[in-house]
Image (cartoon, rainbow, N blue to C red):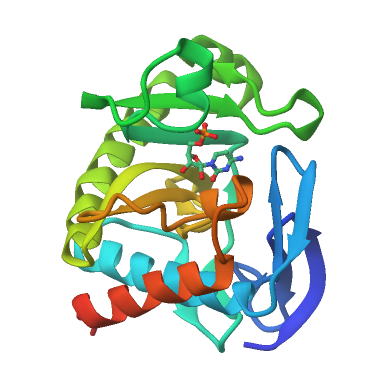
Length: 241
Ligand code: C5P
């Protein structure tokens, strides 16, 4: 596939048309890192490559476990071919343990376990700072139906189980993560966007060390070394194809 015109530029990726196939897009991962809704910004040479390769591995693993995603294939170090979807403007967060915003919002101690996992919906809208919303808000703010939201939540829990297994093999605890879903041309909903240390909290199973974007948010470690570590662990422990 040949890269066509730029369709959209986000904080972490650029989205391009393909010249030969209107139902496919090319995602190009950038080296930029942002946190706190774009208030903290930096560039890390090599970050785009790492997130492209990590997300590709994760999506291949999900496909092996019968979870449908927009992912088709990695094209090179920083770009991947995906099926074209229209993103539903929801951030679906799944939490196995308390960390980040839920500790501040509800005063829950970090590391508190959640059984069953907590699912939270945020409305994806920069101007509003991505507010936490409930199901009925989601029906008003997006085009999803009640049935579709039920499907999205079931799928999020299934993805959680599969990813917990994957990261366990890599010596990591999956604390929480954010998913985005999109609609294919036929109206069906599939997992889109990315699954990477930018969008997951991953803690070393033995030491508890934070091995994700929190090293950037909290200024506690080297982002590139951390993401390299995650990629290496996935390469060692996960057999794809
Ligand atoms: O900030 P918060 O604790 O709500 O984040 C929960 C999870 O969702 C974390 O893994 C975080 O990396 C991810 N997230 C994200 N994009 C956002 C907000 C949160 O990937 N805009």
